[in-house]
Image (cartoon, rainbow, N blue to C red; front, side, top):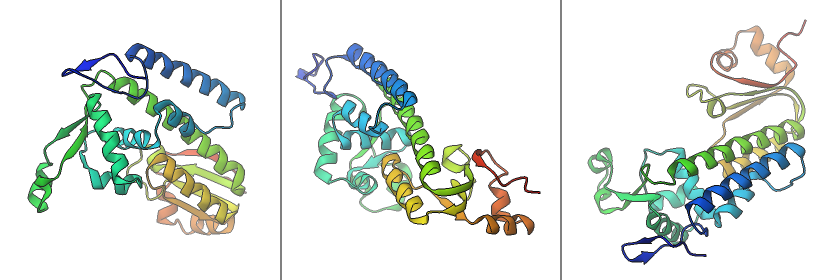
Length: 249
């Protein structure tokens, strides 16, 4: 469907919805329905599959997630194709649509880029338009999707990784920027399963997940010698999903 908002004498095709009010209502209804069904464990579809259906395109969703993850950073097309792992023509097509909808805008090359790299001024750079009327709604929706996706990831990793004695989240998951790792898993673990799940969710989240695994004995050995890495995991903000080791007598 096409929206009835004209810009410079042209009608723009935005995300397949009729107008802003309908878009917002659909956001709310889909999110509320998803949250309810997720809590009741009645829906098998993952959160990002739901968002793909909502936005109508995997590439469009990946673009929005990339821009909203670093809202003050500008990107050029080939850079986006590398980050997202998507063909360049698909990226260009979706950028054109989002620019027409005032979600993304074309900007000059960053100052440091002009100085450091030859040819940077010849590229077209794109930046999230934080003055767009849809900015706060898209930001809220993607944030909710990220939170639900992380909840889903944590549950699946906890249930499928083997005999997990400790499961700690820090780094990206708690906004602890100085952490050496994002996840610490301790126990008799299924290493291949852990690696597969991490790889799967890295693609969905759009960022690398740094994780550390160790046996129960290795954990206690490191604790005994006051291992710097291990203790650093507990110095900043963290969440203990599973804690069966900290107070062994």
